[in-house]
Length: 539
Image (cartoon, rainbow, N blue to C red; front, side, top):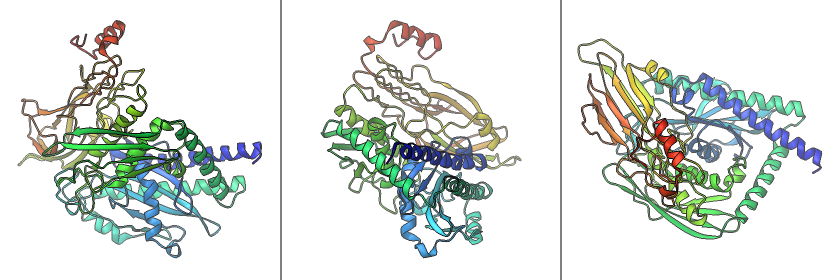
């Protein structure tokens, strides 16, 4: 290929990424749920006719993007080519064929040009409610966790399946929000298709074949070059997490060979009877993400880059089988990157960040008026983040969602959703682990029902009995705390009650420190005290 053609193909590759970024932004702008429009809990991407991901939007989470990369293949297997038509949109929330739990809706739309199938657009988003027990760990099987939608047609030839919408309306608590998000998902795929056809017309191509070959060949070559530079061998790591009733052991073994990196999760605890199990599709998504962050953070994420990583596991909590409850698969799934990075730190000493809070401190609040009082019933979802682990040359980031990458919702948007008041939301002093480089800080959040209301909430928290560990001599981060303002300690997981007049207090965990605390410059400690990051006890 000539230099001019190389440049032309690279420009088209960048243009394709802009297409899927506009696809994702369409979802952000039109979504009903705050988890999508405010937090960016979504993904969007374009695939070739065989279901291989060509490009993903920058907007989105690894858990959604990397599961979506496999989910499209599931759609192609279920829906024969002869049953695919222009104007179709397909949908599922199957945890084992989608993104790991029922709250995520995945939609796939075939893209046609001049009657030829040239690819697919896919997107995912977390909706506020799918019925059942609600977003929480209390279900004993997936059947209790909400409505299950098999891979099926949301629309055929542009005509929406109204029977599906009727079923949804009778099975979810917030039907207008949920159905609105379904339409938003379908619309974002439609925008992606239109922009792709415009791009192909402009550059004079009938399909994506030539561009796809260029993308995959260049990505594969770059990945092989990076893997070749790594040390070869096997490294293991273990981690304890809070679990539900009992603590959970997570185990991993990383094998780096000449052309592939495998992560195996044998030795991890067995499946839980509570909804913290993780389907393999989600475990694989975050395991691949962790390795890619170390090996090739600058190489675009597509099917060729993901093919350089393999993941294996016997049946256990990280490879849960149907019909295990999986509603909170993210709590354990978000621990997978720290688990994998701990193994990578043994292969590449001095180069890997310390452990962080990892799992989002999501909270689902079901608000209602007190008995005999008038008021609103509402379902409110908040995403909150603890601190990241310190890095080999920098302090950890505070109140930052790693590995998920989502934003927190603005307090104003959250309070608008339902009758609650967020009285306090600020960084938590002394929560970052001490070290040459300090761990990131968690947050302190106080939430109360509005006047005349009370609420139940689903706790989805971890790092309470098992704080984030430091690296290379760094101290652990502070563990999390869940309590009422009268001092009553609450459980880290499960549905619980906050009566009228009381405040729920969440103290989010901090990240672990990196390096010996004695090596931290005095000027940095003085700056931490001045900024309020530490109170003076960490000297």
